[in-house]
Image (cartoon, rainbow, N blue to C red):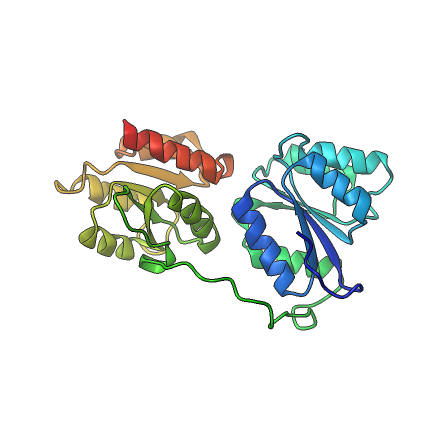
Length: 281
């Protein structure tokens, strides 16, 4: 859907198949005064670029029908790069992929789980030669009706759903994961272990998604204490981390985690699927 702004407004095409992330980015860009149109697969995204001549493209790499490299290669062959600014947003931060994308003429490359939406906005402003102070903010747009929330901003729920506790200090990641889990479960959210302890004392938690790098006590220490508690040691724990070294994985599993998931390798849908599998075991 095209956001109707004045004809001289900068126009951004966002190609991203993760609907939650697409909505978050598109909303923030529109609130900064940009005109935004979205596509959820590479074929549709390329066609949109062809017919609409955007000022900037935000491009996911893992896309259905035609992946991000396919889009970049078509744009390169058509002679549109590097004149058309493209900022890649990817789950993968592998140097070989970054180098390949740079050779095709991209402007910048962001790894999804290492940024927040404000960083994307800053990169967009840089492309357009704007600063945070001079970029237009749209204050009169209709506000999105907020969801009801429980602990530290997680969506609230009713009914007989399993209770999932997400312990994650990155608010952007926590929001993406919480919204995805919200489709199937009652979600509670904590940004550090003290809040997690408080939630555990008040709610019948069925499974915990636990980050390792947390402010104060880290995830390993929290997991150790959890598994030494007779009343809580039965709760399965999925470790979620950007630390993907084998020794880190082995440490988490040896401390009693049901599984160890590397964030950069997992989409919210895949994490949801793994939560369902563990609960069903």
